Amino acid sequence: MAVPAAPAPPATEQPEFLESCDPATGDVIARFRATPVAALPEIFARAHRAQQAWAKVPLRERCRLLGRLRDVLFDRRGELADVVTRESGKPRVEALLTDVFLALDAADYYARRAPQLLRPERVPHHSLGAQGKRGWVHYEPFGVLGVISPWNYPFSIPMGQIIPAVAAGNAVVLKPSELTPWCGALVGEVFANAGFPADLVQVVQGSGALGAAMIELSGTDRPGAGVDKVLFTGSVATGRRVAQACAQRLIPCLLELGGKDALLVLADAPLENAARAAVWGSFMNCGQTCISVERVYVEDAVADRFIARCVELTRQLRLGHGLDPQTDIGPLIHERQLEKVEAQLQDAVARGARILIGGVRRPDLGPRFLEPAVVERVDHSMRLMQEETFGPVLPICRVRDAEQAVALANDSSFALAASVWTRDRRRGRQLAAPLRAGAVMVNDVASYYGICEAPHGGRGASGWGRTHGRLGLLELVHPKYVDVDYLSWWPKAWWYGYNQTLLLAAERFVEFLLAPTRQQRWRAARGALAMLPFRRPGVR
Ligand code: NDP
Image (tube, rainbow, N blue to C red):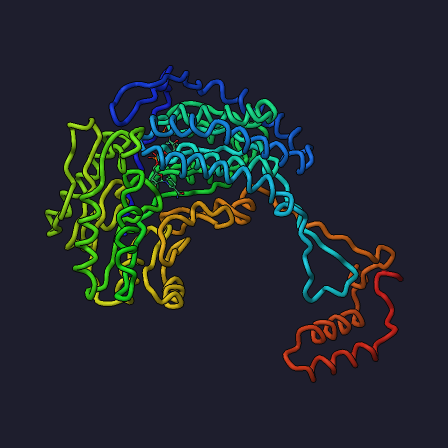
């Protein structure tokens, strides 16, 4: 499958100010001073100093501050939701639930659970268990994490990464998207309000060039100079650039990239709910969600009814400004996003697709409104079925059966999430196995992202690594194995003085532990006993 080529490298010059625009009107609603690239070394030096002090703060105290953060988020929830809506264009109910609530819930979750999740973990030993040893994995902070975030969930995505990062003892330098600097600034503000130490969570404002410069500063040969790990969320093209830059400097990175999520409707699906889920899953946040439904495969037997219902539900949707509580769908974030969606629709129509509803601009509402579209007669020759659309388009493809649906769902370079609709829950779970995805929901869409314990992340062009839950937390720490030998007075038999006796003893030892039959193991044990007492080599 084709993956879009990486764009040209970002220009290194930075604007002096970043303008925050309301995408519904195009009006400038706030201005932020951009961070000069030259200021980065000092910012990172402060971050490293703050991190070293923070790592010494007991975990319970760190979590107590996370509890304060939760309270700050709760107190400021209305104002935060307003800013998210004004800057990203999404309906306020979505801003409240998918940006503010998710951050609040993450703060509450890690405040309560981090002590348990980060507790040193006892490691039961396998073959060498009887050697008088005990082992534990301790979790140490990475250091300073560079969080580079997109504009589509400008508050919950960075917060969902920064909260566990600081719980684990890291400091963070966040670079929000230049399209959502206000939300980025608020991330820094709420940590300061909650009483976190100065410089622990810093926000730098700028274009992609600033994100690139954060990585350029860093490297294993320059400890303390830049980031120790990058948490990147964004497009495939930029993710590839970030991975290349990190690889050159041997810095680890986590990549949360695009998606082309499939929704499978089986003949026994609860059809009304499946149609509602497809419409919401495809159009929420105007389709600008990494785990939005980007392709539907519906079994022939129910396809007509399903498609008709999707069209009907789409017709009822109301476009408007996100601050209007009646609004279902806001504008797209940017003119270039509209053009990308339109180009995919044109390509699909030229190849035989039929737009059943929507797909036209609404300049009467504002410069970036597009009516949500339902498209049928689509196939995999179309860009609409191959590339991430990231707009309000629901392409529906009829399939013979579930096997064909799975095969088509897997025919993609992306592998982020998928959804299966069937009344037979067991069959739904069975179908999750062959689906190539980081998460599969049976009879729901996207909501797993809000489950604190559920890991989120993809494969292939959707990136690597996980955020959220225990697996996400483990991305933010260095596991360190600590082993304690309880027989400190007993020199080990293999500490030199190698001779024939030791070799024979070693052979019996290997056979005793791992010979395939019980008989062989007994024979080895008897052989070893017959050798006792053998001279401990090394003591001459
Ligand atoms: P981009 O890749 O354009 O940008 C992401 C971030 O990277 C922005 O802060 C951007 O800055 C910055 N950036 C740009 N160039 C560089 C560079 N060379 N080095 C370092 N940083 C750079 O993505 P979008 O903001 O357009 O976000 C949309 C994409 O994000 C979609 O593909 C979507 O699927 C994906 N996404 C994935 C998620 C997941 O969890 N898998 C979740 C949400 C979104 P600036 O904006 O200032 O240019």
